[in-house]
Image (cartoon, rainbow, N blue to C red; front, side, top):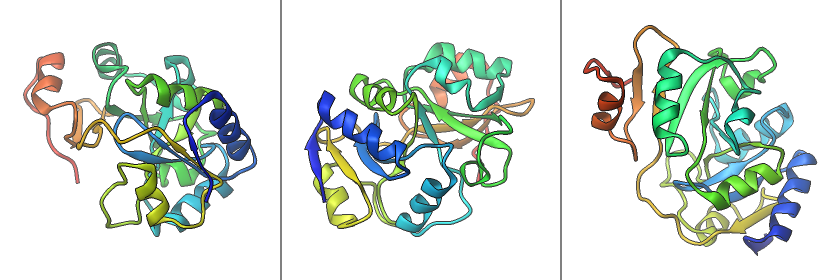
Length: 211
């Protein structure tokens, strides 16, 4: 397994791996993630096979706000409010997906979860790989998320074209995930960004946890 310290050279190698349909592991703004070209169905199949998961959407990181627009069909008012306040940040916004988003990415839901991470190194890796990169956590289904490059390698002795060692993760919490496609936002997972912070931003109190 190839493990490289984060550097411009490592990011270029990651770009080559992603362009070739392979998988890379890298530290995101939360845990280590599995990076792949979100428009490559074969690469998305590799993610599900590697993690032993099926039928779940795969979230995506954007390097810049304009990159997110390549996957998002519609920005609701709630989307705009939350993005303006919490991006860059550990908030994954679930929005209506553009038709070209692969079904394996959306799991047939017609929606896509996108985040603009508050981590310059993570965004630099994503930018090197074309501006969008998947970032589902780098762990087998049912196991704790990897917090170091060594943990990723222990979980997956094979399967990655490259692991970028960006050091230990900087939080013990996942990103917060909120669906903003409907008339009222639906809180799917509370993480780094708290329910109270979201309610303050939107000045509402009817946020509900999803399943």
